[in-house]
Length: 409
Image 1 (cartoon, helix red, strand yellow):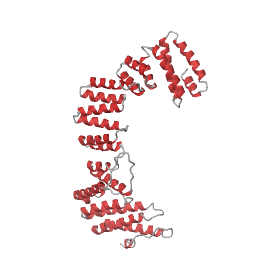
Image 2 (image 1 turned 180 degrees about the vertical axis):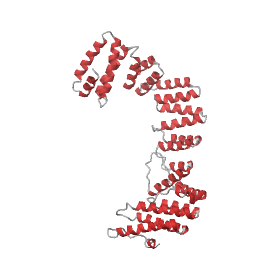
Image 3 (image 1 turned 120 degrees about the horizontal axis):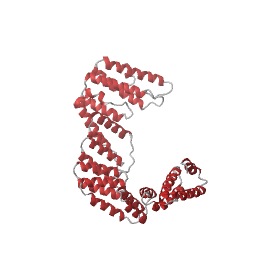
Image 4 (image 1 turned 135 degrees about the vertical axis):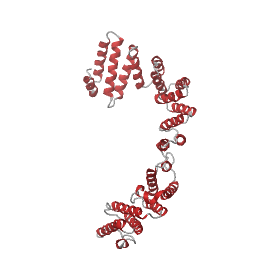
């Protein structure tokens, strides 16, 4: 107690000459605390421990020199306090209040682990701790979508407090509450919905996803929210709503992935043929947009409608990547048709360049060679003449020539 009395009035500023003396006094205080918590009167040890922790936390705000030992001292002091509490069983409401105030007043202080206080707090103390923590969390302003969250000391302290409470109690409402203080990104809505879904609270998860869809309109991450919303709707038997969401997703982000998601939902509702025709009509209505054409070609390829896919690509165009896929599907039946496609793709890929272009060009040339052999009796000879001419034109492209040589071309 004598060591503590010398520190109760606060520590003088740490300076070079007196710093060693301060550390000696702090170590003595912590040593005496741990000893009293083990063998002294438990009720007195609790009061003593709380004073020691307060002194150390105050000291942490004053130290400017080597403070590396201070966090360890604070944690040892708090461990002594937890031991004294287990021995004395103090008033659970008072203990809960002290633990919350410690964390809010000293965000850089020792880490409170609730499992070490569970016995002393009991159900009544845990409930009081939960009420106080949730009240502090309600006071935090919510970071809206699109804003950059700023974690000041108070916000950081409250979030850490709530995280530990949720971890210890497994309370889903506590976890959702602290997660909901930051709605700045689509992923926060997903995190909240996932927590609720994992707890079997599908309806609430869907409500959060719906909120996220409203907040994040226009964001690519909305696709993930739609996926979760569709799955939740199907589990809840809301097939019509699931189908509406899947259609919206396909319209907003047309692609093979959203098309297949639409098919999955429509199959569940026995409405796939109508939805398939709707999706194709919608894509055709996009005019000469290359992106829409590429998606339509991909879809027709997926549905094994090769001739229809070729007709769309020939009429409206599509991306080089999709042309390559289409040519690979058509080369066996109509090799003469894919020859100009592969030659065009080779030229474009060489012009684009890039670190991967030697490999990609070589692969296209291999496919071109197969097509030429199947298209004409002298196809191999024609391909080799074409290849030699191309190599002369690309004589300065050492990476490409090396890749061709490696493949025996």
